[in-house]
Length: 324
Image 1 (cartoon, rainbow, N blue to C red):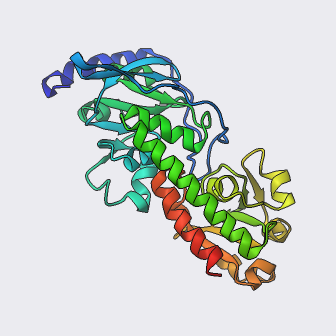
Image 2 (cartoon, helix red, strand yellow; image 1 turned 90 degrees about the vertical axis):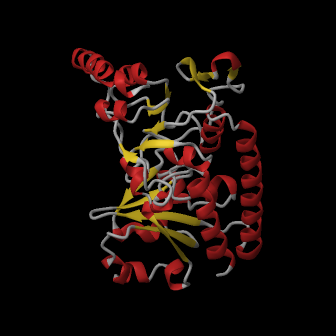
């Protein structure tokens, strides 16, 4: 989009925005408090995007139907799934605030703007050639007037299928599938090594806390849960399975944490959190804590399930389980 067109386009979009109805608001961020639980399902597209060489575009089969997009987009706004895009070397010009704050991506996003679905003027100024947004966001119709807009529904695809869709979108499907095959193989091997060392029935619980509550997670709520329970094949405790597997997470008080604690605990810690509970007798008397079987991860760096985050956590888990 040329800069000379910005005033006219902006006026059109803002007029339409003023007249249109507001979409449903974004659910809580997947990293901070998460949204709908991810469910395995068939990818939104069963084939790579079809080529249109004469115009330099391809047709991507999105969950809302075919969308003509650039064959090699150079100015992407990632309002959702930005970490997946970064992992494939996508050229981002705008990202959501949560990705921008994530320490795993600080260097790569130094010159990338923070933007939201509510800021149409800023989206226009960034001159995107592709926008990736969530189905819960506002102004989706208006964004599609600015640039081709691909919409994903959080939780419709599992973590690997979602990455494969981003691979198709960026014309990197083969590269993405190769990574999926390699990662799942390495994670499975690590899981087998963990079970060989600690027993086939070894259990692990993933805990996180904020100013008021504690949380225990199921098998698809980031924080490495997809690696531990799906790829590695490790077990959760019966209490975690009963209360957290279905909804994705379960809220606890400090007093009942021992009932949910596994042989190992993965503790998601925020750099700004209150760690006073670590000195409580309740915490210190948990067998996994007494045995030194607590693996700490950084909450801010563990809130997605893209390749960069998964590789980062796989490394931590291999050391935490196998060097203990």
